[in-house]
Length: 108
Image (cartoon, rainbow, N blue to C red; front, side):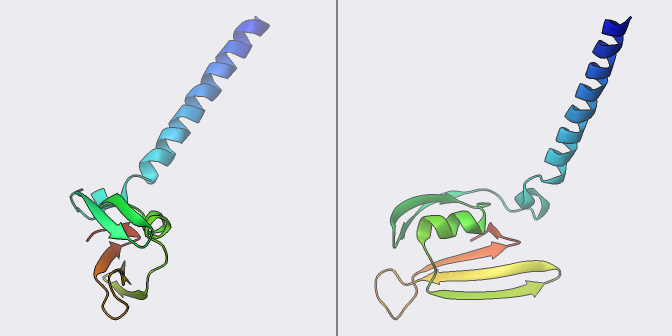
């Protein structure tokens, strides 16, 4: 009887933990699905070399791969955080590599 009770309690706790884990995953789903931006892949020549990027990448990942931007601008429109970063790759006067982020995700 005691062993059966342990099995039932263990099973119940396992189900509860699994449902909690699935709820957390659902709550932190991809933000790009929420703002309806299709995923596209592209290569970019950065200060750190050539990298492969895709729309939907987090801003922190882009900054890690491309380095600190030369220009940064941000604004908020209709509750969405919009950020623009620019890199001066070929010369020191004109930014020729530009990224746009909506809510911290690469869009353009």
